[in-house]
Length: 87
Image 1 (spheres, rainbow, N blue to C red):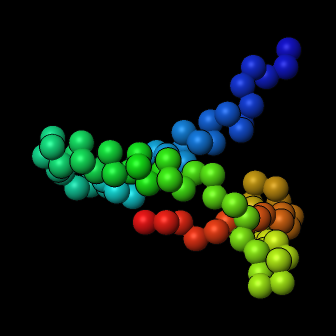
Image 2: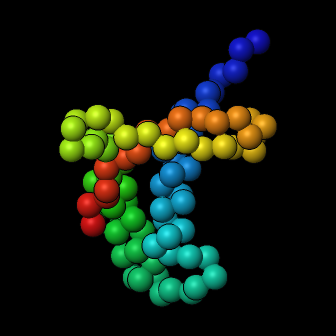
């Protein structure tokens, strides 16, 4: 039986949760209004920057970054470099 859910379907949710931890870290305790404000700020930031384009050089060439993930045995993987986020 093929998988019903691919790994790409959860990527956006995992990215948002990582961003939420950036705005409201778990070790810190915030008041309820403070937590609501931080959650809304994280949602606004994610919605603004979730579909950034690939960065280009001055010569209009796309930029790439090489990563060596342990999950693939250290094999090199080319990943696109995204534009800088807007804040």
